[in-house]
Image 1 (tube, rainbow, N blue to C red):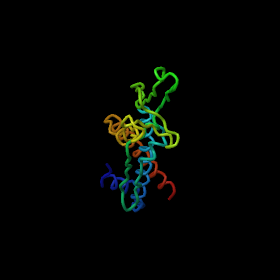
Image 2 (image 1 turned 60 degrees about the horizontal axis):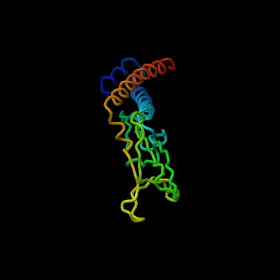
Image 3 (image 1 turned 90 degrees about the vertical axis):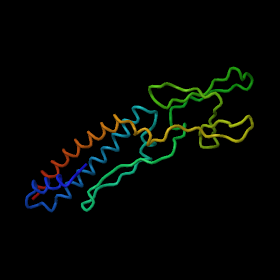
Image 4 (image 1 turned 30 degrees about the vertical axis):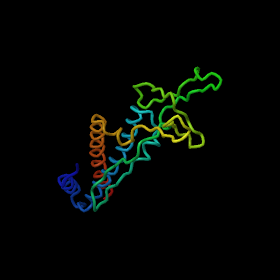
Length: 184
């Protein structure tokens, strides 16, 4: 959390250039927030079988400006379809249905695969994974797993990302002050 104390500290270090203090703070904040996005994606991929594109598609960044010294990253999204996780498609033998190999899906990296006996991949419906609700042909139910923002609720992950963001903020803060002083 950046307070007025940080702004005063920047003003004191800059001396005659104290009007540039909001620039220093906003640049430092923006670099820290960019790092938060990277770290969240990297650590979520260590836990779940997800691609960076799937994770980043849910994230938005609000950058700090010199007038509004607040920066934040948010993640919003629906439940993720199973097709975005690790899928081992099954095989169905119409002549010997008892020899059918069921589909397997792995969501978390450490938990292994889960067998989906009655699931199938529909190539005509964007290769999503479906399951029939009844014995009839329709209706179908699209199979989904957790939403990406749920992956970020892990307390250890949040603590670690917050610590690295503060570390980067402090480094960038000192660097920006040094850069302004050398330029003048």
